[in-house]
Image 1 (spheres, rainbow, N blue to C red):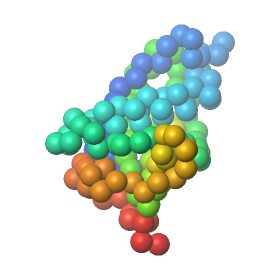
Image 2 (cartoon, rainbow, N blue to C red; image 1 turned 180 degrees about the horizontal axis):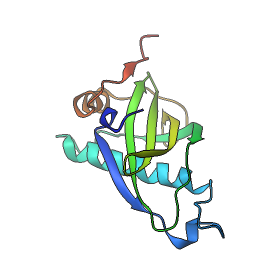
Image 3 (cartoon, rainbow, N blue to C red; image 1 turned 30 degrees about the horizontal axis):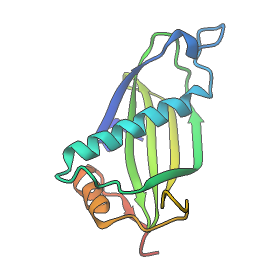
Length: 147
């Protein structure tokens, strides 16, 4: 996983409340960092699109995986790198890299399912959203909607 694989990243500074007595980030906070990165990714995608309503309904996380490589410490400036690596009929897979400078600290994967807000049932990802992702990403996601 290289930083050049990602078009999008956002900075995040480790706060005192996120570390344990050894000044190391408590592992559960990395999911919060991933959530911040994905939220900012969606914001950037909207801004890059000519259609601010591309998201439509909502997404629900159904799978999260984090692989810890090295710890982040209090006051570290991190870069949360995010990209969509796989795009299915109703789901998408985010890949994440949390870096301190050039050092990869955490790699992750989060799978979201696109769902209707009222029924909370999966529904197909809209063409406008799919097209916006394909235009935005530096590395084209795998098209899993055909499998």
